Amino acid sequence: MEKREPKIVDRAGSLRIVDCGVGTYGVALNSRRSDNFSDIFNWTGANWDSDPVYVGGVRVVPWGPKDNMPTAVRDLLEKNNIGPGIIARKLGLIYGQGVQLYRQTFAQGEVQREWCEDKRVDSWLRSWDYRRYVRDALSEYLHLNGHFTKYVMSKGVRVGKAYVARLECLPSKDCRLSWPSDAEGYLAHPLLEDIREVLFGDIDNVRALQLFPVFKKDAPLSHESAVRYHNLGSFGRTLYSICSFFGSIPWMENANDISEIVRILNENMIAAAYIVHEPSGYWEQKRIELMTDHPEWTDTQYNRKLEQLREDITKKLAEVMAGKHNAGKFFTCIDFIDDRGNKQEWKVEPIDMNIDKYLSAQQKISKIADSASTSGFGLAAPLSNIIIDGKSDSGSQMLYAVKLFFAADTQIAEEIVLEGLNDALHINFPDKTDLQFGFYHKIIQKEDNVSAGERAINNV
Image (cartoon, rainbow, N blue to C red):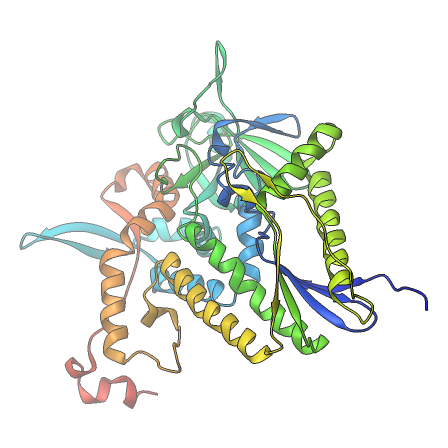
């Protein structure tokens, strides 16, 4: 009988589904991590923003160890079951009833906002899509704690008249800070205030690239178009900010794999599976060997080769452990001691044929992942629409949560998101320095304090 080579027919995260001819088996390499964040959470890329990289011949500050932080966060959230919903809810809470002008006053020892209208300012706002700009800037901020704003000046700048025609929010994935230099050459340790240019374009494919000067609000006549990075600084980072849920990413990756694992189990009717413990040092050593043998390769080529080696080992494991002709077969590998003195060894553990227990374990992991993710996104469970064990939060819990959110979690976001809009306001209307933009929020009261005819239950 002709021997049939095992074939990988599906995959989800660390799980590989292998067709061995006599059956289908699941092999989980349980230390695998997404390539997008592997260097970060293995602590090999802790100082990724201290060394420049080149994009289209321009020396820039990398955003992440592979200069793909915005894209990696996007790909992660697109597969996550709770992240986009929580961010959308948070965006709606901060945005409230939209952007309005206000004048700050003091009354009885407290700071108050006096909301007002101005026809000249309204006319300027109506001349461009300011609402979309604000929504995009707020979305960028909630994902990566900052946003890039392009200031487009009117033609009057050519004759010395400063006037901001409109603002545009540029996607973070298409922007990079240009590495600054001085008379002696490139700065060794630049700060955000040292940045003079921003590279914009298709960063991933290195095309349609443009260099914009950094916008200076004290010198608005310097350029017809300029870009500024508005952000909430991250501790230990001097340039780009990182997302608030950064520490929850490993949990989110696991949560993203669960739905795919369940789908694969349903489609392939797995009857048995093995967990293969692969030492991380094994793959680190393999990468070093590849870099030594092929120094001309790119990171993409290294990753592709490592993935091929991983699949080859998966097939070999499946061939050894599956089928009626496996008597006397064995899998061999080399154990070694890493530079920290830890033994790097392979272990194979069988999982009993109890799919319900396996799925139950995955469900528990999913709950932990959801909890960790929710905490990372910075929105209380009553406002996140997260239902735990079939129980939803009461109205009073949601009420107190939303009041606490308005009191503590909106001011900083408002200052950073609307900083560009307020700068443009004061440039265009220098006589209105007492006015500024803010997010208007209608006061929410307890139902007990609302007259019977005005309560929600009587107005639905």
